[in-house]
Length: 178
Image (cartoon, rainbow, N blue to C red; front, side, top):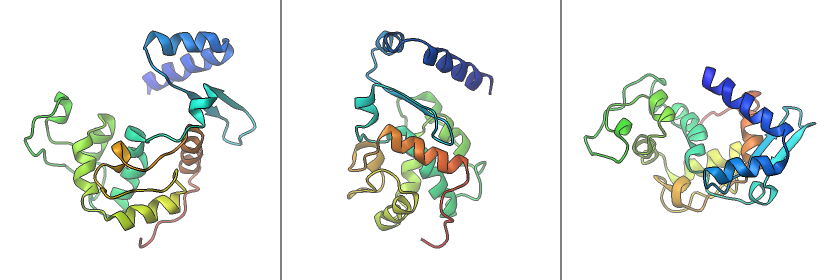
C-alpha cells in the first residue's frame, strides 16, 4: 500500500509539471508510453501522449484484471488463495518457477498460470465476457491461451480506464451463466 501511495504521489506531482518533464521520465526509461488519469465522474481528465492513449494496443499484462474475474466466475479456482501447482518447467522469471495462488500470479504477472486457466475457457466464452465487459474490440481470435499477449484483441488506454472505473464502482454487469 505504501508503494502505491508513493507512486500516486509521484504521478500527481508530475501532473503539475509540464508535459516535457513527463516526457523526460518516459525517456529516461526508454519507454514510449502514455498516462491517462480521470476522476471517477470524468470531470477531470489528464492524458500524456494522446496519440498513444487513443491507439488500440494489446492489453498484455493489464488483461490479468478481467482474466482473474473470468477465472473466478468460471469456478476454475475456489478463491484467490487456492494453490496453483507449478508444472516444473523453468521459465525466465524465478518468481514464476514455483507454486502460485491467484494473488501471486497477479502480483508477478505469471503468464503460465493465466494460460493454464485460459486453455479451459472456450473462445466463445471469452468473447461473451469481453462483450459483457465492453472490453476493447472484443476479439479473441483463434487461441484462447495467449490472445491478450499476441492476438487480435486491442484496447486503448482510455478504454482501459473506463473498464477500471466500472470495476471500481461495481458497475460491471452481473455475470451469470456465460
